[in-house]
Length: 205
Image 1 (cartoon, one colour):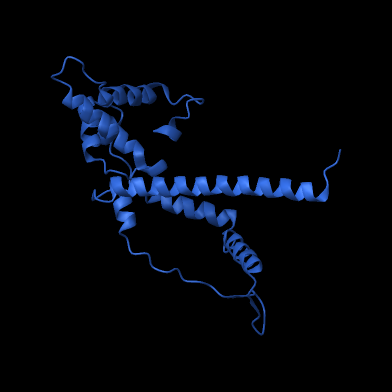
Image 2 (cartoon, rainbow, N blue to C red):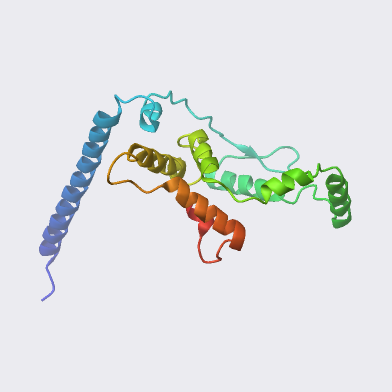
């Protein structure tokens, strides 16, 4: 049997109450996680979290209106959606503005290539040599933390952490993986055979 109007109202109120309770639980979990992270990391200096928390948040400049291109006298748009369209069109048009003809580009390329400093034969010979483990180790030592491409710059930190773990375990019975040797083998294999098209090598390294 179909529900009466009062029954539908009661059912709707009960569902709304459940949704409100679920939402309160979600927000409480967010607050608890934020509080736990703040307690864990806020007192540890020189971390990304610490610097972001203690960084001065300057107010952003706001744009209240944009001039419609080509309008004379000037006409200004104040609606945010139309302002967004004007900004989009402006940046799209920049892509094709002042583009040279193909003949001009070819002439410019010829001029540039004629003045590019070429690699000396001795340097070419050095570049053709395979990498040594010591060279990889030196690069790992020189890598800055948190500056690698990708999510949060973690790739550099990962390689450095694995190398440090190996060095600390050299006198232990259970040695860790020698990441420097692994990277040496991988890069030399790429130098010899190239990158496999299905490896997605550039996405994870």
